[in-house]
Amino acid sequence: MRSPVLHRSLESGFSDRTEVQFNGLKNQGATCYLNAVLQCLFMTQEFRHEVESYEPDPAEDCGEDNLLLQLQKLFRQLSENVATSEGITRCLGIRNVYEQQDAVEYYRKLLKTVGTPASKVFEGKMSNITKCCICGNENKETNPFISVLLSIDVGNNEKYNVEKGLEIFFKHSKLEEDDWMYCDECDQKTETHTWSEIDEYPTVLTLHLKRFDFDYMQMRYMKNECSLDVPPSLHIKDYKYNLYAVINHRGGYSGGHYDALIRPYQNQKWYCFDDSTVTEMSKSSLQDSRLPYMLMYRKEETGKELRLTSIIPQHLRILLLGPSRSGKSTVGNLILGVNYFLCKHGSKTVTKESTKKTVKNVTVVDTPNLFSLTQSSWEKELNRCIELSHPGPNVILWVTKISKFSGHQQGLFHTIKKRLGSGTTKHMMVVFTNGKELKRLRQPIHTFLSNCEKLKKVVRICQDRYHVIDTSDVNSNQIPELVDKLDKMVTENNGSHWKF
Image (tube, rainbow, N blue to C red; front, side, top):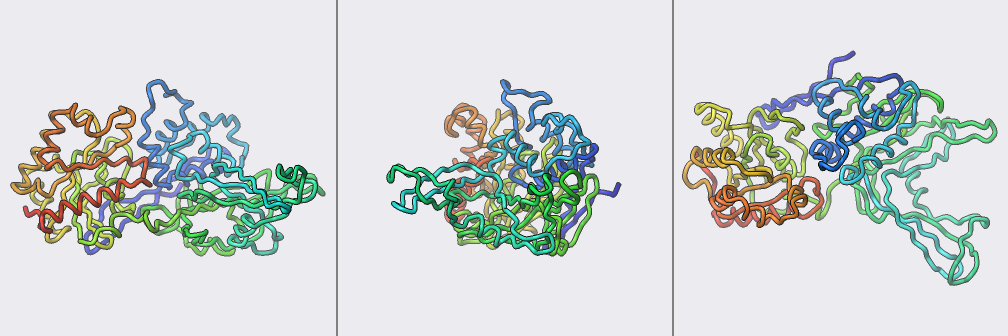
């Protein structure tokens, strides 16, 4: 068994000492199909976040049959070491782990079982349209989809073109006479045109290459092993999709082996996840290959989906502070629109020292648990924060979860306010994470604050500046709204910054 792959990065002369570790999954017999799918899901940040932040309702099943809980357990293990998918196979009712199954089938089964909001990132809406060639009457049936099945129209020794396959999928076609549709306007079956259109484009577009087809001459399924160049990006309508994962298949219909090629969101390198083995690979292996079976593309943010960095005209230097495990790194990633700061589920703090990331005109400095440091270490870390955000931050975000606000949490806030010195609060704003808790409580934020006197005092000290982020709803206007508040605060302070 090979060692897990480690990756370190450097930026602007400062060391980012956070290690990115990728671990494999043990093969229980012939469960490579499931391992490949699970690795792709684990490396899809939105899905991973939903799984890791899942909290079951007391009325829900919290046992071994709860797939989200089993995924949560698996992802926690996978973050630390080589893991096993035994809990997932039990949950999915897989009794024979020595019998190979279809990876795409279990990709769909997993997402259907977990449901929304976890599967939301993969879901789009597609319409099948039929049109009467006589009167022009159209019928439209719209349904959700999580993958697009592309037919392969070339032979084993020919080369398949994915872009052309997509064009064919959406091409208008005439139905055979036996399949003509009944037209209400014409009151008879008429010649019919049919085609498909995507109404809502998913964040992650999954393409399934139909390599297996039934051969009526041999009366069995046969595999098309044509080669192809996997496109690094796809342009569909007004959207650009970038490749980040490929599931490969070797062998035939009755047996073979799956692995996954993935470009993790933590860096731009490609890795091969082959059961318990993880190795760095060259992207050239995606060219002229006979192995690709499922392709996963992420939609590139454009227009109104761009984050704060393209909206705010002045340079923001944001310092993230707050209790341990409050979601500071997640807030930083949302603001930047880049998954730079490492986030993991669990009770341990991930950020070990202050690190920064600059995207366009915004610099974000993420901090560790400052409250665990001695006075000398505290001062050293704050000086580092100033160095990273030179000449100093003009925005200080106090990040905390929406939860019962204890006297201890209030004490932490006053401790940091005291240590930062006078004049700090004019640069401060409270950012509440776990905004979906308000939905569970069925309370707007102002009602929640009015019922918590200690928390209300903290917000008042920050001159009544606060913002709520629901990380399960990343496509809403919550980031642009935060931009407006930060812009107003910096303008009111005449662009001044905090000094230690």
